[in-house]
Amino acid sequence: MSIPNDRKPLTKLAQAGRRPEWTGMPGQPGAIVSPPVWRASTILYDDVAHLRKAAGSSTHERLFYGRKGTPTAWSLADALTEMEPGAEGTMLYPSGVAAIACALMAVLKPGDRLLMVDSAYDPTRNFCEQMLRPQGIETIYYDPTDVVALDAHLASGPIRAIFLESPGSLTFEVQDIPAITRWAKANGIVTLLDNTWATPLYFPAMAHGVDISLLACTKYIVGHSDVMMGSATANAEWFGKLRQTAYLFGQMVSPDDAWLAARGLRTLGVRLKQHQDSAVAIAHWLKAQPDVARVLHPALPDCPGHALWQRDFSGSTGLFSFILKGGDEKARAALIDGLAHFGIGYSWGGFESLALPVDPARYRSATSWAAERPAVRLHIGLEDPADLIADLDAGLARFRAIRDAG
Ligand SMILES: Cc1ncc(COP(=O)(O)O)c(C=O)c1O
View 1 (cartoon, rainbow, N blue to C red):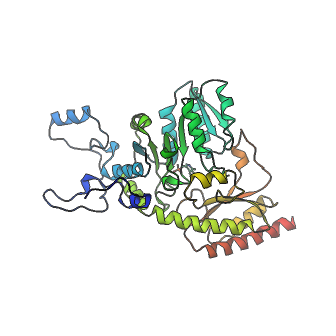
View 2: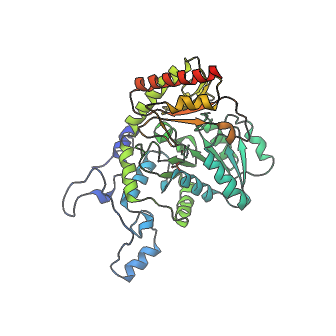
View 3: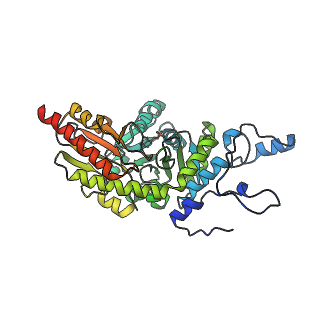
């Protein structure tokens, strides 16, 4: 059965990553729908000649040694590549941070300068400060919403790469990615995007000019809060270097984890739609509450970059923040601590709702953030939104009681 190339994204989610190894036994027609888990360290060869031949040829997506993967992981990598029109290939990593770190190492060398979005996930900043800077790679932080200001950085020397995260995962500024990639291409600068929030389903990054698209698959790709994983998908110009760097660092994922992530991927479309619908409903409800100063959600008109989100993205997902009116740490903790349906914990993208106190000012250097106002980040899971709203309503009452008494 041949699969046409012009499939819609939801059709791809159901079909992507089918590999020849899944066909039936030799001489027997038929194919399995879902791959088996191929566990492997040692691969055996018939003789020395075959072993030498394997070592001397490309080992990409060929059985060679367990660290180079088996068809279980290759299938997931292929599927993620298929979700990104214009991509050449995908490498998988044991976490999202590992994907970010390895992609930056693939692109940068001592003496290079990197532009890093000021709203980046804080461990991304830590990698720049604690790993890149000691190696003589300078990181310059830039305002996520100001494309025009980028030119000024060229005056002080060449820039090797620019890193984007859109929207920022605490403060949700949407970046003008097409304008930034055009600017980068005109100046010979490599673009890397942390696309974890939108996934390739709601924002196909290569089609918008990005060179390397990064996902913390831990979040929506896996979708069930039971696996850590990252991926980097690159265009033809960058995939070879990305793969070489991943091999040099010994990066790989277990076949069991790849299998779980591939299973998660099949339902990404229906899950994201539900996350989106519930999160938008809850964001609108929060916006109408007198104790909420602001809701930071790209689908709401007062989110920085809302018009860009409308223009470039085909959906929003379940993660957003809101800023409380007044109050202090104690009042915010009272809101969060008593929630019945929201877990308190890091990460997001699973089927469960989460609430987290966030203090974005701590992770800013190029832009300012109103530090005095407490903020809460929510991940809206797949529960009934009416239960979540009732829970937040009671939480705001607890917040109000402490704020007004203080
Ligand atoms: C935007 C973003 N990027 C990357 C990561 C890192 O992913 P992981 O936890 O799999 O290392 C996270 C994790 O929270 C994240 O929120």
